[in-house]
Image (tube, rainbow, N blue to C red; front, side, top):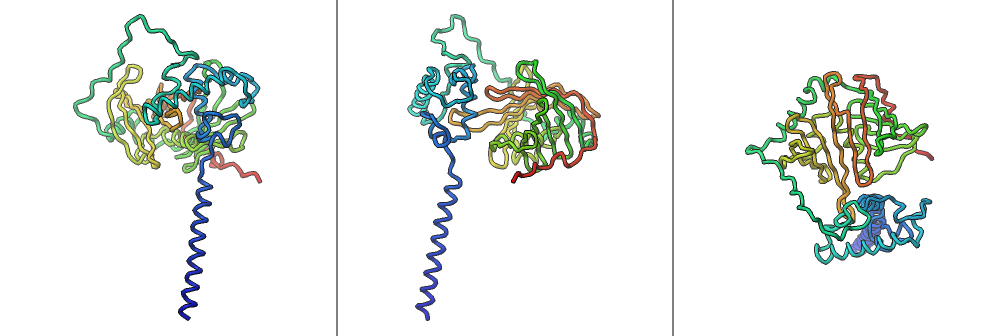
Amino acid sequence: MKKIYWLKLAIIACFVLTALIGGGASLAQKTQVETAGQKYKSIKVLNDMPADQMGKVMNMMSASLGVNCAFCHASNDGDYEKEGFEHKDMARKMMTMMFDLNKVNFNGRPEINCNTCHNGRSHPQPSFPLTAAKPAEERPKQPEKKPTVEEILAKYEAAMGGAANIAKVTSREIKATRVEPDGKTTEPEEIFQKGKKLVANTIYGKYIVSEVFDGKTAWKTGDSAKIELKIDETEQIKREAQLFANADLKPVYTKLEFRFLDRIDGRDVYLVLGTLADNSRERLYFDVAMGFLVRRTASSPTILGNHVFQVDYLDHKDFGGVKLPTTIKYAMPQIQWMRKIVDVKNNASVSDDKFAAPAVKK
């Protein structure tokens, strides 16, 4: 009987071990990152780069050279995999050189990138300046007594109108205009806020793009059809909703830390580093004199270095006792736009249906 017992136990153990090994292999397969070389054709240098970095990296290259897609993908017909273009071949050589320089000199860290030499020009300038270089702007003198995060946030709350006035507004219906980089092309926007929920609709004729945060989850749709987003893109929709008309930032970040006094456009600002639940960090800049949050930057790593997403909050105006930024500038490499708020209706009747997730198509 004992032999049969131990034999059964051994068999069970084998099954368990096999399941664990098989399950581990299955999990590894599921979490394996798809590379650019696996997803796209005609990849010769960026083969090992995660495929979801492709859009960001292409925009970083375009911004560094001050060109658009057609500079390298000269077919201009949407087929980016066509070969036989001089600039595309040269870009591959330049990237190989860049990666080699970083490997040999910086242990593979992306210290050198396209912008290091190009600086917004399609061809690096081999000439030397004939005039004295302008000295770099000095960081403002640091305060003898560092402000606490609590003091900075208290001033921000007071600048917005105070806790009592902020609490009085539980919902908003906002009319705004999206302004494209040329400063002429515009699209109407409608924004609805209710508690911690927010939806922003941009209307392109009959096509409506919506960015939604229901208090827990964020997503984006085009005419109610869900648009696939990267994790960091979802986070930016969520963060903009969390920070809008909200001075209570401590629940948003797991840690807030004052770093130093800085300067933006000639105005002194306090830089506060905000750490999120996933240990990523964002930079929050508060105007020293006025108290407002005037800039937020977030970054996500790529093979070329950090891809930066920046939001500037400007032109604060009073709407029923609460001051909101009426000019909001969004910027990332090769992509910029602006939102101009033109009307705010406080405590409007906003249906929860506006924040409902789109139905899953079968």
